[in-house]
Length: 351
Image (cartoon, rainbow, N blue to C red; front, side, top):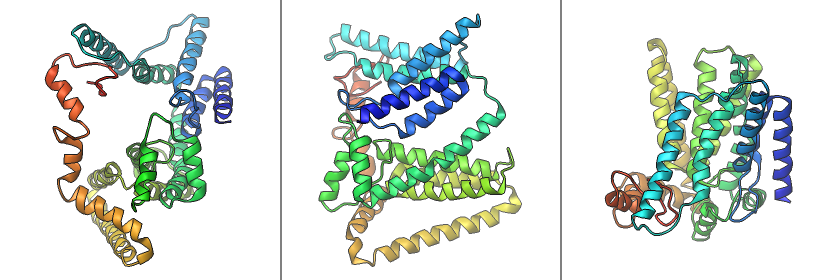
């Protein structure tokens, strides 16, 4: 069933791209947000085959017009990086490294270059970019609602996530379920299969929404301002539901940049607003800690703030030389500091 849904979405995007490259690229962005994981192998996401198909279609359109695909400078350096990583893997294998080249990882990185090519060869106008930014912010409403449902461990959100947005190759959701059985709060991951990715998405939505509201680039209508404001609330709710250091730390950086960018006359008003917001959040958390029925939430928040953030446990968990998440990467860098190991599945890292 999920494969059929993804195939229909894929065909819809291609049909839109056949009619208009601009419409196809826009539909591609929407599809990768809502498309379920296809249960093929360890789980296949729709953007993997779709990006290549869109590139072939763009090349065909250009060839008919007697033109070639254009590549921006950033795309050129991205291509150099992909080739260098692949060559590094080949050198590592010839030097006696174990394992083999992880071709799906190779394509996953090349896909970024493909997306750059597809979007750079579409003739965008300022109105198109303005519309894309608005709808990107609006997307936080359904995804924020799903995230809140995931954090609340609702039956509907759990069913949607486990069936459509959790592949066998990523264990983040299974880990969340296992932690909930130990008495910890479920952390939202929206449709991204990872808490940090979800936190980064909501952070980007908040940044984009603030640019639209106060950046002064293009005036918004009253209706658009309301929609952006409501979407920002959804992004904040979804971001807090991730209980992610990526989101929390990024939010502080966004607030600091916002304070720096506004004019001096508005800084005190902004400082007051941020202070009030921080106090409201702190009081809200303290009030929640007084409710015995929210023991699971209290346990998770206590661990996150008082163990991970206010002590060195969070850094140790990631960067400890022997048992940290980056231990394999550190050892790989020590063994090959110049060429790295490239895209080898055995190493478990891409250096």
